[in-house]
Image 1 (cartoon, rainbow, N blue to C red):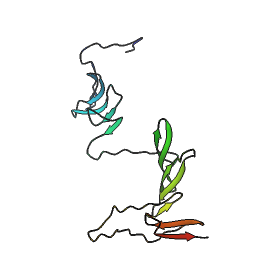
Image 2 (cartoon, one colour):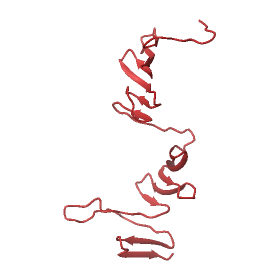
Image 3 (cartoon, rainbow, N blue to C red):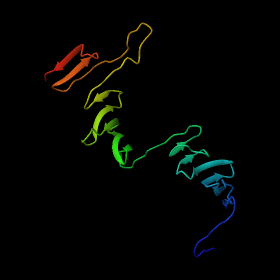
Image 4 (cartoon, rainbow, N blue to C red):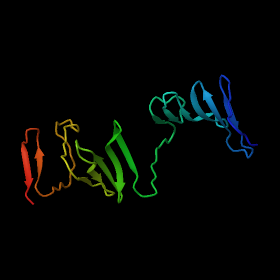
Length: 178
């Protein structure tokens, strides 16, 4: 059938039922008290909900944040066909940080005040961390019962003319003179 013009459904709980005659899942598109819902009738599950605040719930009926994914084995996947998947964090509409991949490495980037996005830390496929720029600060968060701080570092590499500083008061400072 062909419909010309607008289709309006007026009811307290308007619903469009989509029934598959091949015994696959059947769905309903519903206005559920102001929440746009895609409901899996066959499995009695809310698959997608967008509430009046614009919050989106996948696998849940009442999302309290802009995007909530819920369910057994819930997972968010970024699959980029250009081999450069990127997760971007914005503050007031401006990119502040990113997490992305390059050549199998996971890169953490940030935008310093007045600067441009810079890769600061990378984790390669062999589990090696590389501090690209900036400082590495290790607080005493992994304190053992003996009061010692445990860090299992095999190697620290410094770029030319960089410092390695230990202690809050610069108790020990190693300078690489290149």
